Structures are given as structure tokens and as C-alpha cells.
Amino acid sequence: MAQWKNLAFLQKEVFFESRAMEEWLIEMRRSIHRIPEPGNKEQKTSSFICKMLEEMDIPHRSYGTAVVGLIEGKEPGRCVALRADMDALPLEEPSDRPYASLHHGYMHACGHDAHMTVALGVARLLAAHRRDFSGSVKFLFQPAEETTGGAKAMIEAGCLENPHVDLVLGLHVVPELMAGMVEVKIGPFYGTSDSLEIIVKGRSSHAAYPEQGVDAIVVSASIIQALQTIVSRSISALDNAVLTIGKIQGGVRSNILANEVIMIGTIRALSEDVQCFMRTRVKEICTEIAAAFGASCEVHIRPSYPVMINDQSATELVRDTAISILGESNVIMRQQPNLGVEDFAYFLRERPGTFWHLGCGKPGMEKIHPLHSAEFDIDESCLPIGVAIQAASALTFLHLRNQESCG
Image (cartoon, rainbow, N blue to C red; front, side, top):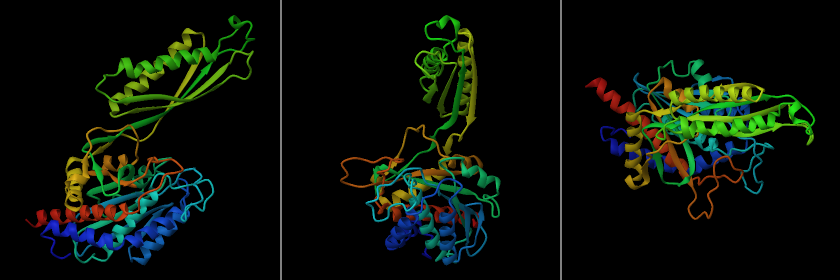
């Protein structure tokens, strides 16, 4: 890989080396898949990552269960960070798989085992060539993507400094794309979300005499109906937003007016302006409708992850690298964002970077099993593809930046 003035050669050579480690990658992925753990409790996973980095002679440090590895090249230069999330989901996995979860009630149903495997594969490849490039590459093994947003905590702990990170790359496997295909997008990719809790307080009475009470269920029904008009009538049709009430709980018996109803939901948008407007309107609608019925209402909104916005240059870097490796027909430029959320957004608030999709679907499957389902699994042939694109993108960035600094 010394002939790096020819970037096409570099990228093809990286893909060749990535494919050569496919059996090792499958072994790594299955080892990690067997030990799924919830957010901020990834002790076994963290220990496994540290053990593998030690075997590769890669210096690393830990922040709780988070692990940061660092490969330094032959001389100082720019720094690229590659992020891999670590936590699993509270799902019971079918036991008929030879690599099924050994932890009852938990499963890697969102592909984080694949993400960690790709990062370890990049680490192995670059560790063998650390004297062939300038600059450095960090590996951010991040806890709690599914729960508390471990990216933010890692940033606050200083993971983007010492050395200063200039570019950050992340990926996610998606079963809707077949293995061998990737998807990239410039600009807003994932939405922002808020957790919503609404507590309506009425007054109990006998159901035969409703005039003596204030029925919190009736009040809540009116609130739910009115909340739907925020998206349909108060936000431009050109803006993306969703408001969902996913849970409602209230009442004790059929012949007693409910004195309290609790509703739980989510607010999602693709811009902070729309998000702030929705927060305001939710509070106004809830409190004023409740007051009109003679009830009261508490609205609690807990902000979650921000909008994830991909940098154009970083996205074009990954796109061009993927095209060089896979061919143009296998690289999709996504046009529309989605309203899922991803705490990689915190990294992109701090540094230029991009987040892309790695196809992991199995050809010939009659039904696609989505992320977050107990039937989810990956076509493991996607692993060396992920390694190749992440490694080649990082090396291309470092090589181009080094040329610029020398030019």
C-alpha cells in the first residue's frame, strides 16, 4: 500500500486486504453477538474490545464502558475518528442460531455487533500499516446509543481531543439494502426527538353523575385530537415532523370518572426551529384545552438527540470511496431524510463528518426482518465491505490532507 499517490490503487488494495480477513471478521462479530449488554453496562463488551486492541498493540483508554483506541502514523498529521456503538436491546433472541445471545433478555438486534466488528477490522488493517501513513486514526467504541446518548458523554470526556479530531465517520447496517450496497446522504439525514409526558388532572365522581366531576379521559381525548393538528395545520407541508402519543393510562373502574390520565409520546422533526415551535404548541394546546374543561394539565418535554446533519465534503469522500470499491451502481445517493434518531449527531455538531448506511440484507429472503426485531440478522459478507470503505475513506482523507499541507 505504499503507492498512495494513486488513490484508486489504495482503495482497491484496502478492499483486497479487508476481504482477506472475512473469516476473522465473522468470528469477531459472532463473539460480540453472544454477549449483548444494555447501555452503560457493556462491561464484557468493553473488556473484549480492550483485549482485541491490546492484541493489535493499539494504545487505548476507557471512560466507564466507553473505549478509545488510537493508531498513530509515521508522522504527525490530521486525525480521523471512527465511531462504533456498543449497546444491545432488551429482546429475547431465537435460540436456534449457533451464535445466539448468551444473555437472557438481551440481543444485538440493531447491528451494533457489526459496527464494532467493522471498527476492529479497520483497526487491524491500519495497525499493520501504521508506518505507511501520516496522521492518526481514533476508534470511538461508544456505549448507550439506544438509551442515554453515550456520544455526548464521550465528547464531554474529551474523546475528540488529544489529538484533535478533524473528521468523524460512522455507519449503520440496514437490512433493506442488500449486502454489497451502501447509501449516503448529504445534509440532514436523521431527525431530532423529544420525549413527551402529559398528565391531565380532573376530578373523580360516580359515572352516573358526571356533572359532579371532571372526566380526565374525555379531556385527554380532546387533547389527543387537537395535538394532531399541529403537524397538519400549524407546520408547513414542506417541513417534516411527527407527533405521536404512544401510551395512555388512566381510570380505575368502569363506573368512576378518571381523575388522572397520563399520556406518553414523542415529538420528531428535521429542524430545531420546527422542534421548538412544536414544543410551544404542545404546551399551549394541552393546558388551554384542559382549562376549558375545568381540568389542569402538566406537560413535561425531555429533549433527546439533535438533528444529524452530514457534511457535504465528508459525504462525497465516502461516496467516491465506495464507488471506487463497489462500482457506481451499488452506491445510492439518498434524497430524503428520515425521522429516526441517532446520537452520532452529537459528533457531527462538533466536527465535520458523515454517517452512512451499509447494506446487510440477505439475497433471496422472502421477508426483510427489520432492525429492533428478534428475527433481525445480517449477511456477514457486508463486514469486509464496511471495513474497506471506512479504512479507505480515512486513509484517503489523511493522504489528501497531507498532500495539501506539503503543497
